[in-house]
Length: 444
Image 1 (cartoon, rainbow, N blue to C red):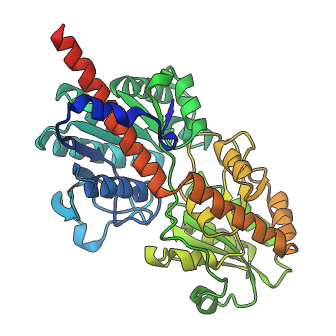
Image 2: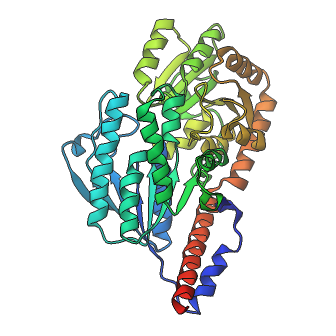
Image 3: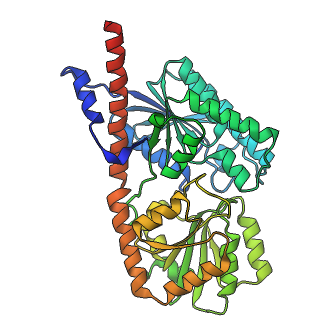
């Protein structure tokens, strides 16, 4: 396994292979279902990677869908459209049709993902051959089609895994193990074989992938980076406190996707346990497939200390996160290293303590322990979560120390410049090693 943050001497292989001639940046095809203007989840990191490579002079073509996430609805101007080309700075973006269900279910999600995999594959096939093809998963089926086509076209291939989708579906109770899951796991193995390199965002996820039979030499760690320039520590008295009636309150913030994997019901149960503390408020910002159910649950419990707010503009992220006294990152019980919440690095950048509801065996918990920036409680344990929040409420100096450590860790280990420049160095070294090996073979 190679960690892009480690630097090292791989980049020097590029210089050795050039014989003094100028390097020509390779062309990159990035295939991802989520992309800007989506401001949460995987799309943020796919966009950041494309933008960085484009600014560095690579010829980047992104094959993506019309934006829909996390609201699970397309914009009015995109409905009924099959294809669109556009530019984002130096990056060429090719958008294709996908089916977006109003109420996602397991079956509808399958059609949703298949629709994009098919149209993205056609877009990829109709584009000029790329030197490197990067496929972002999920959806899993995207890798089967696009990586297969890439191999046929002689493109080097990278599968970048943000979510171990079959494992997640089983562990979250969305699918029962049986014939269909066996088909998914078989497909997963084929996709890993098609990829020259399999990257992921956490060591724990890469360990799971290695256990599935992928050799360590093919594994690449590309952690989700912190946007330390966008997210800065700010005073707690923000415009959101005034607008949302939070002045003088201890604010517990959840920001991001509201889906099954997050296990947000336990957060609402913790709010019920703390309902008599009038100055403690729970604020859930974002959208997702479970939001309507969560709102109904709040009404059922009659909670006055919980409020839901829509997604906020990216440029206001610092102020939003500064509104919190504590940020929470819950996970559903049984979820292990099948995914790593995208938000964690930016939460650290805000210099606010984290309360993480997760098994201590997960990568998420290990990061919190390394950074010493928060408290870990068992998943879906509302009492433990409430107790941790009360302890932090009563210890403002402790909260400040945890927040400062989180910011320092994000700057040192997860900065965007370190992760992205490290990926570029690795990419150059990987391509140059292949070039050297091919030239030696030809000379023989």
